[in-house]
Length: 193
Image 1 (tube, rainbow, N blue to C red):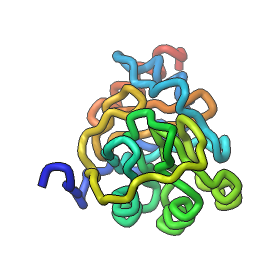
Image 2 (image 1 turned 135 degrees about the vertical axis):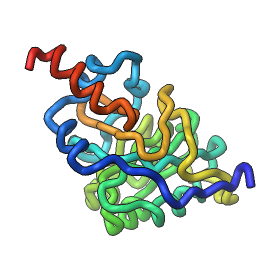
Image 3 (image 1 turned 60 degrees about the vertical axis):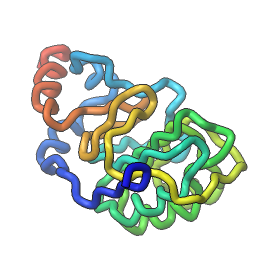
């Protein structure tokens, strides 16, 4: 049903493709993109400065609603990155230390939030990379509305389930999986390698 869709199976890129992208910064990769695939500059690493790279598990939620995020964590596989399209809302949180703990246990590589998270100290202790727009003490509504693994707009960029997310100290770049090889070649040309 629309508003409650959960797609359990997504096509993930092969590990070898992720390995080919690994040497490049987000700035390098954005130079290799034909269109602007860099998320809003306000989405930055809050928890760890560790680079993240992996396939997107997308979460579409109404502004201020966060309950469906738990379902995304349960569907995630090792190496996935959870992408929460939170409409830039920083008045309430979509993520906290409990979700970081569960995601870390599932082998998730990180979370990217177009919105806010909370429990900074707890999240920092757990160490799962959190890229977000802001930090708040506010909680989210938990009505269960939302969708998992559908196309979303996060930080001004379209993200499809399984697209490759790369995050580092420069920001977050989205690599559409079907264009990844082309973007790698463009990036190499730009860098002269």
